[in-house]
Amino acid sequence: METKVLPSHVPLPLAEKVDQLAARLERSRGWIVKQALTAWVDQEEERRRLTLEALADVDAGRVIEHHAVQAWADSLDSDKPLPLPL
Image 1: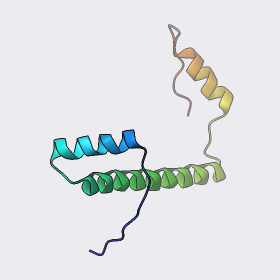
Image 2 (image 1 turned 135 degrees about the vertical axis):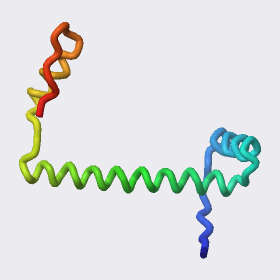
Image 3 (image 1 turned 45 degrees about the vertical axis):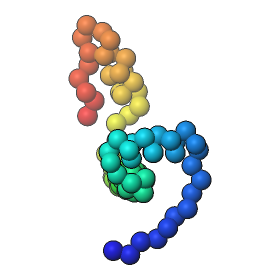
């Protein structure tokens, strides 16, 4: 697999934590950074997918009114909570 160097400036406390993790896991600093970056990119891609899915629901009219959600949330501390609004 081809690779590309991505230089970055990292605050010293974070760099020290990365070094500690690398030592504890017996892995290189680069391996730790690659794992973290991969997880972050995956998370952002999932966030975008979910956002687009939610926007499609809104466009299709599949929404729950704010007041219904608020009433449900307010009822959660009561003896008789409301059913989940659908």
